Image (cartoon, rainbow, N blue to C red; front, side, top):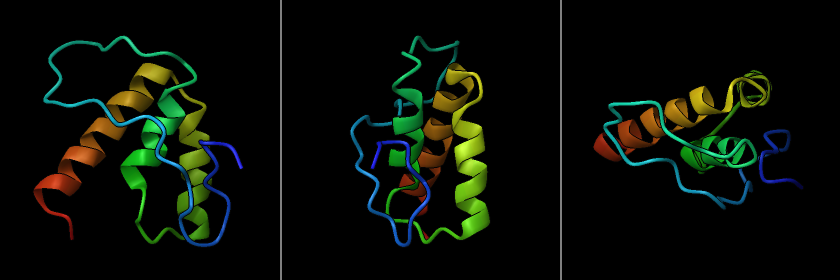
Length: 83
């Protein structure tokens, strides 16, 4: 299993790279290989459906800075209201 694997039952994706703290006021500098892991960490523990995982896999291939920012937003939203 790779750290950006969203394709299995349950959520066993390792959280190897924490999402960026925020709020972000400028484009962050992140490495391409870290952004999918940030996204995986942001959704860790969430009950994800097949289509959810499919979209996350697609999204993880997008511009890595965009992916890192989206991961940061999801992570912060879950911290504020973990429901």
